[in-house]
Length: 96
Length: 84
Image 1 (cartoon, each protein chain N blue to C red):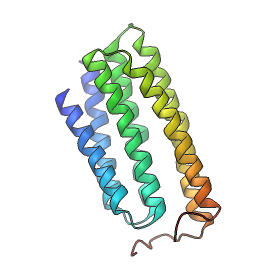
Image 2: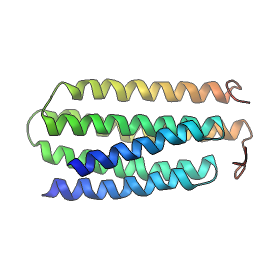
Image 3: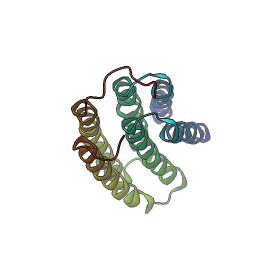
């Protein structure tokens, strides 16, 4: 019950973020939409899976996976944004 | 649960479409990161639903290796390689 609500809320965030990374116009806006879908949506889906699996031994692995997702995703976002900014990739030049 | 799996799969297909379409190299890198995140959450979902406990170990290894790959590619493109 609770896990269904959490997974459903995560799917809503996931769909919103996926529409965002398809519709936005440059790399920095896409990074922001990717932060919505990956940090909020996938973390909510993983929390729902932790609630669903119960005290079975899988919950520690899923919690470690959630910790890994929340630790590495901001690092990856910062790394891609710094890489595009250092190479003087301007905002808004998506036109080939 | 079938709805969750099919929405995750549609989102993965959208990320792979951005990986093919993206005009610049950083769009493709972002799409690769998004696709690998969706792949390992889909693996965790399949593992919890179908009760195959050994998929979770493969999921943890996949998450760590995809993080390393994306960070190394971003550092490589920061120093001036791989894009026009």
